[in-house]
Length: 161
Image (cartoon, rainbow, N blue to C red; front, side):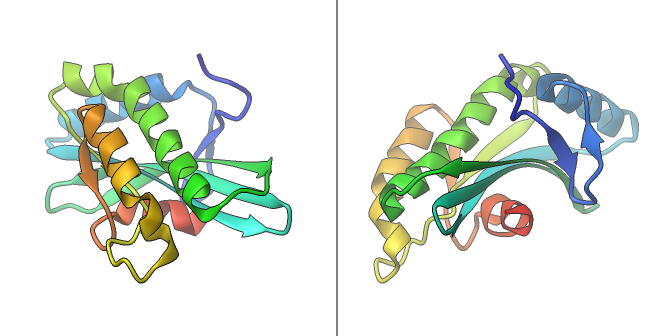
């Protein structure tokens, strides 16, 4: 069930009124009709602004040898939480969307990855959430990617936060 915060837009800022499952299916159909082979990558990012945390979740459609485009959802939450909890909130937002659109992706045989904006280098604070995030994503049956391979979160979602 989609909520009020389910306003999806592209990177240009165009807002879509369709539910995300419908938007994803329409996109897949269009891309297949155009002869494009695609895969989907989902990632979230967040930034802290005073007492607020701004989140963005991106669904990136990667065309084989033909570029990519994305749909993004943004929202703001009044929270004061640890870096680990914030990283896990990002992962949860990505998994929530992956779970929602999985049936459509399976129907059309589309490969999916879930990207986590978590550094694999233990020198970085976000690394405290790496094992939990990886376990959650892999436990849900999804392909896991972390930095530096997590472009859906570190680039696309980051652009919109």
